[in-house]
Image (tube, rainbow, N blue to C red; front, side, top):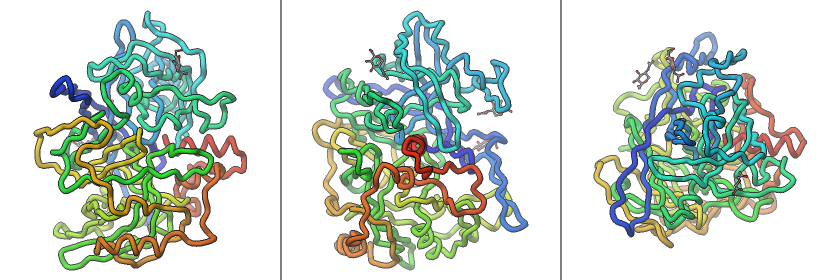
Length: 504
Ligand SMILES: *[C@@H]1O[C@H](CO)[C@@H](O)[C@H](O)[C@H]1NC(C)=O
Ligand SMILES: *[C@@H]1O[C@H](CO)[C@@H](O)[C@H](O)[C@H]1NC(C)=O
Ligand SMILES: *[C@@H]1O[C@H](CO)[C@@H](O)[C@H](O)[C@H]1NC(C)=O
């Protein structure tokens, strides 16, 4: 998750969890619905200068969240659902940044998403270990780990550890559902002598017998829908069209034996319309699938290829501008994951400022490093099964046609998923992107990719020190990025902390 306060898109939320009935006792899954809400506050309003004119973007923020019931008696808090991190933390009642506690220079209204007072809960167990996380926008959360009676959508998940942040300038807590290896306790931040992991939500659901496999599907529904859903342990065949294709989650960090982030290989990108199909690039690139990020990010040289194809020009801060496409513009982005495509209308990636009216910004943004992030603008068009147990992801084109469900539990395999033909043809290092190739002849996809990727001796496997760069910070060379965290301090601990912050 990236809390993009320093740009104008906050990835934010408030929501409801609606428990859904189990279909039968043998079908093990748990479906939770959540509301997507526009924050709609002036804090989202960011002026974006272009020459003498200014872009004004207001009320673009949405985020996906769930409600938790904690303690005895119950206290309710709302947290942001994030595939890009792995810990659960909530705001403590005594957080000095809350305006209700007198606040500070940057006080926040803590009543919106709720706080937790552990002293009022008779069942709270303090783990007496500290928790600390810093986010890309330089917000932070510090506190202590604990456990308590805890439920989500009426389902008891009391085994899930959570941190109570008694010191945070972030308005909303986070429910990270990524790999255990990415937990702050696991040492990715480098400040633990004794790294360890603990069962986070998806693992506890399996341990408690609610689901059979540590896997879940995220369905964001259409862009204008007010709700999305997460289905733990199951796949809903009615939420996608065509086939569900499986590809491996890849490990882009040499110091880890297994993948720690939900990163897959994007094998090519094109633009398709009723009159033309154009391949932008058939170069491979690792991309993080992150529900906690709104926009799409690629390395600057990769975005440059996209901008060229669209006739977009660089503005600043990694952003490109273009003439706002007309209402009948039918161009689509075509994402090639190795033998299958996910399409998404260009209009989904267009940010319309409130002013000026004729110039739009591209929601595909340049960042440093050699990997990308596919956030909600992309994920809205994809139905994604995150199979953390088998280090695989299955993807299909999302379908918004019906509210009817056709849910099957995920057992040892993902129901109805087939291996993508490009399954084994994944990113193997390197970060040079070339235009051309042809992703539109699917049988040619594999060939195109393998000739442009795997660049001989220049192939670099990232070390821990470059992890932050890989996950990407916004364009450092841009003159206007003032609040970017520099992750290449040369100090390993600093870099690792910074690295972790990329997942916020
Ligand atoms: C923000 O946008 C949403 C959805 O478009 C709309 O319902 C809401 O009224 C807007 N809020 C403000 C303050 O403009
Ligand atoms: C937005 O502003 C309104 C009015 O100022 C306030 O009532 C509301 O709580 C704020 N919402 C958020 C999410 O900050
Ligand atoms: C907190 O304590 C419980 C019980 O001893 C333990 O199982 C859990 O792993 C601990 N959580 C963390 C985050 O250390």
